[in-house]
Image (cartoon, rainbow, N blue to C red):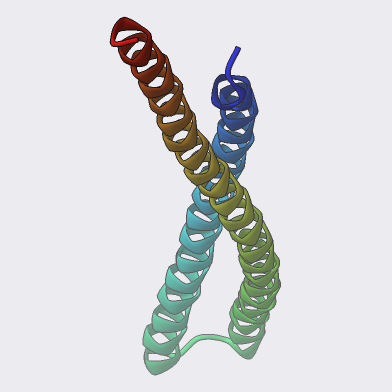
Length: 143
Protein backbone atom coordinates (compact mmCIF):
# COMPACT_ATOMS: atom_id res chain seq x y z
CA UNK A 1 0.00 0.00 0.00
CA UNK A 2 1.34 3.37 -0.98
CA UNK A 3 2.24 5.84 1.71
CA UNK A 4 -0.27 8.38 0.38
CA UNK A 5 -3.07 5.80 0.64
CA UNK A 6 -2.13 5.03 4.24
CA UNK A 7 -2.16 8.73 5.09
CA UNK A 8 -5.68 9.10 3.69
CA UNK A 9 -6.88 7.33 6.83
CA UNK A 10 -5.21 10.06 8.89
CA UNK A 11 -6.88 12.68 6.70
CA UNK A 12 -10.31 11.08 7.23
CA UNK A 13 -9.79 11.14 11.00
CA UNK A 14 -8.71 14.78 10.82
CA UNK A 15 -11.84 15.55 8.80
CA UNK A 16 -14.01 13.86 11.44
CA UNK A 17 -12.42 15.99 14.17
CA UNK A 18 -12.91 19.11 12.07
CA UNK A 19 -16.57 18.21 11.50
CA UNK A 20 -17.08 17.68 15.23
CA UNK A 21 -15.57 21.10 15.94
CA UNK A 22 -17.83 22.65 13.27
CA UNK A 23 -20.85 21.02 14.92
CA UNK A 24 -19.80 22.36 18.33
CA UNK A 25 -19.42 25.82 16.80
CA UNK A 26 -22.90 25.61 15.29
CA UNK A 27 -24.33 24.60 18.66
CA UNK A 28 -22.63 27.48 20.46
CA UNK A 29 -23.87 29.93 17.83
CA UNK A 30 -27.42 28.58 18.12
CA UNK A 31 -27.27 29.04 21.90
CA UNK A 32 -25.93 32.57 21.41
CA UNK A 33 -28.91 33.36 19.21
CA UNK A 34 -31.26 32.08 21.91
CA UNK A 35 -29.49 34.16 24.56
CA UNK A 36 -29.69 37.30 22.39
CA UNK A 37 -33.43 36.72 21.91
CA UNK A 38 -33.88 36.39 25.67
CA UNK A 39 -32.05 39.67 26.20
CA UNK A 40 -34.24 41.38 23.61
CA UNK A 41 -37.38 39.99 25.23
CA UNK A 42 -36.27 41.34 28.61
CA UNK A 43 -35.53 44.75 27.10
CA UNK A 44 -38.89 44.82 25.33
CA UNK A 45 -40.69 43.76 28.52
CA UNK A 46 -38.91 46.45 30.55
CA UNK A 47 -39.74 49.09 27.94
CA UNK A 48 -43.38 47.98 28.03
CA UNK A 49 -43.52 48.42 31.80
CA UNK A 50 -41.78 51.79 31.61
CA UNK A 51 -44.38 52.98 29.11
CA UNK A 52 -47.10 51.62 31.38
CA UNK A 53 -45.59 53.44 34.36
CA UNK A 54 -45.38 56.71 32.42
CA UNK A 55 -49.01 56.46 31.32
CA UNK A 56 -50.22 55.52 34.79
CA UNK A 57 -48.07 58.24 36.36
CA UNK A 58 -49.67 60.83 34.09
CA UNK A 59 -53.11 59.48 34.96
CA UNK A 60 -52.29 59.53 38.66
CA UNK A 61 -51.41 56.33 40.51
CA UNK A 62 -50.67 55.74 44.13
CA UNK A 63 -47.12 56.01 45.36
CA UNK A 64 -47.29 52.39 46.50
CA UNK A 65 -48.30 51.20 43.00
CA UNK A 66 -45.58 53.37 41.43
CA UNK A 67 -42.92 51.89 43.76
CA UNK A 68 -44.04 48.32 43.02
CA UNK A 69 -43.95 48.89 39.27
CA UNK A 70 -40.61 50.71 39.47
CA UNK A 71 -39.23 47.85 41.60
CA UNK A 72 -40.31 45.37 38.96
CA UNK A 73 -38.66 47.49 36.25
CA UNK A 74 -35.45 47.53 38.33
CA UNK A 75 -35.58 43.72 38.60
CA UNK A 76 -35.94 43.50 34.84
CA UNK A 77 -32.89 45.75 34.45
CA UNK A 78 -30.91 43.45 36.76
CA UNK A 79 -32.01 40.44 34.72
CA UNK A 80 -30.88 42.21 31.55
CA UNK A 81 -27.45 42.79 33.05
CA UNK A 82 -27.17 39.13 34.09
CA UNK A 83 -28.31 38.05 30.64
CA UNK A 84 -25.62 40.25 29.06
CA UNK A 85 -23.03 38.59 31.29
CA UNK A 86 -24.29 35.19 30.12
CA UNK A 87 -24.02 36.35 26.50
CA UNK A 88 -20.47 37.54 27.11
CA UNK A 89 -19.63 34.06 28.41
CA UNK A 90 -21.13 32.45 25.32
CA UNK A 91 -19.19 34.86 23.09
CA UNK A 92 -15.95 33.84 24.81
CA UNK A 93 -16.89 30.18 24.33
CA UNK A 94 -17.63 30.85 20.66
CA UNK A 95 -14.14 32.28 20.17
CA UNK A 96 -12.57 29.23 21.82
CA UNK A 97 -14.55 26.81 19.68
CA UNK A 98 -13.86 28.86 16.54
CA UNK A 99 -10.12 28.83 17.26
CA UNK A 100 -10.26 25.06 17.75
CA UNK A 101 -12.14 24.60 14.47
CA UNK A 102 -9.63 26.80 12.61
CA UNK A 103 -6.75 24.77 14.01
CA UNK A 104 -8.36 21.47 13.00
CA UNK A 105 -9.30 22.84 9.56
CA UNK A 106 -5.73 23.97 8.92
CA UNK A 107 -4.34 20.65 10.14
CA UNK A 108 -6.62 18.69 7.80
CA UNK A 109 -5.77 21.00 4.92
CA UNK A 110 -2.04 20.53 5.56
CA UNK A 111 -2.45 16.76 5.65
CA UNK A 112 -4.33 16.89 2.35
CA UNK A 113 -1.59 18.99 0.75
CA UNK A 114 1.06 16.60 2.04
CA UNK A 115 -0.85 13.62 0.64
CA UNK A 116 -1.17 15.36 -2.72
CA UNK A 117 2.58 16.04 -2.75
CA UNK A 118 3.31 12.40 -1.86
CA UNK A 119 0.95 11.19 -4.59
CA UNK A 120 2.77 13.27 -7.16
CA UNK A 121 6.13 11.99 -5.95
CA UNK A 122 4.84 8.41 -6.08
CA UNK A 123 3.59 8.90 -9.65
CA UNK A 124 6.94 10.37 -10.66
CA UNK A 125 8.79 7.47 -9.02
CA UNK A 126 6.52 4.95 -10.79
CA UNK A 127 7.07 6.72 -14.10
CA UNK A 128 10.84 6.58 -13.59
CA UNK A 129 10.64 2.88 -12.77
CA UNK A 130 8.59 2.18 -15.87
CA UNK A 131 10.95 4.26 -17.99
CA UNK A 132 13.92 2.33 -16.61
CA UNK A 133 12.26 -0.99 -17.43
CA UNK A 134 11.43 0.24 -20.93
CA UNK A 135 15.00 1.51 -21.42
CA UNK A 136 16.41 -1.86 -20.28
CA UNK A 137 14.12 -3.76 -22.65
CA UNK A 138 15.08 -1.53 -25.54
CA UNK A 139 18.79 -1.83 -24.78
CA UNK A 140 18.47 -5.65 -24.57
CA UNK A 141 16.66 -5.76 -27.86
CA UNK A 142 19.39 -3.92 -29.71
CA UNK A 143 22.29 -5.97 -28.33
